[in-house]
Length: 186
Length: 445
Image (cartoon, rainbow over all chains, first blue to last red; front, side, top):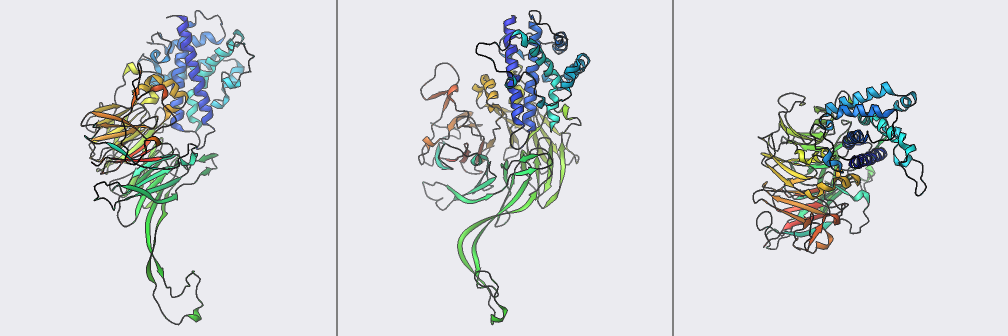
């Protein structure tokens, strides 16, 4: 399993996450209010994408040249989820979920995982992060939502090294986001 | 070429609705339902209106019999409302219409939006009284001093007027969005289902309903599935089923306990691990469940397939039909353009031998259970010459595209057929595209 395919899976998972977040965002303003069914399905996709994202980052962890404060914690938390998870062998995210032991299939274990992640997050959070986490709703608008980023000049690379902390922060805020919190918004 | 049902060939009969491509959102058809005799066909739309068509049956004995459906009644069923407590607008879109079996001269139907169910009485008036003793013709009361004789009003014929009046309003019983209503075979009660709860109503009583299913977890963060559809058994008034977003169907018996949280039967097919993907959960969510007319089977529709279940076997469906399997590799794009959330309905024909459901590109599919044949047909203005036979369509999944085939990438995903209905006795079908209602019938040779 090469780091490139892990990166592609990572990018795909991140893209799906971004798409999902914008859908969730948009659904808050649609007529008739939030649809519980749709929000539930969105959160399930986001959970799967988040888990793939973490597991791919675990794969590219050794080759990742951007160590941040959250990095080790992410690795350890995603290691918990990775019990029985085979490494993805294709760029598409779909085959990566071939493992039937994948936590998102088991809602209970997924709950436990996210709960444990959140617990870990709380332990390791800096005060600044803690204040962000307190909002707890999707409207907190995680940083990696593309629409909120600064406009780039043509030719500028979005995922340049200085934004690395933002990316890791994205992983961090994804877990801290507590996808379960989406539902109690009702 | 013979299609489902033997030598049945489907022909265009009528199309209802505006021709122009610019679709007003209020005109989008959201539900289609024949009544129990098939004489009446009701549609609901996003604007909260109900339009009822009536079949003209004068020419039934003619050899080239064409049953025509003409507008019988149109009324505004639901209006947009505002929930001030939650600062939420309540859409007026009609989610479901269900007819009551006819008991007297009037027709009754239930229509529902996200929050409120209404019982409508549709009655005909073809006579009016004339010659009142105390009133002038325009309705003003006469001066009592001018009345010198007694006369009784006489009923005289008038042009047929169809009146729709709301007889009952069943409100404030659902926190979440109503997705189903189903009239019980006892003709006295009906159920309404939202995402987490199912309520049982009596048709005469509007200020009270009984909660019979409640799957709301104590902690909403633990929510893993929602109710997507529910229906009463056609003959057993104690039995109903509800489907979930996880692809399971639960059959409940109301005699066992007041709260039917424990199912009597759980219908679930184990997932094929090779088909696992990001979107497995979404595509396994059941969008519709329908009992067969004979009450022995039920049909479920998920995103890619139609499944027939024998009520006596919970482990797996007895038949599975792929509606548009070629979309399995496109799930990511369908997720991005929201099509993966489309809720397709399905229906049985009168003798339960053929099932039908919709797809994209204004295609709809029929599966003949006995002859193991299926066909794809298209509802389009191009094929709308009177009695024009519909040509079967074919989608090319990959490889070399043959003549007359359509490639998957050419499909128009904005043209979706979500709602279809089959006449309870005859081979007449109503197929709703975005804002048009197509009526097809089999060719009478």
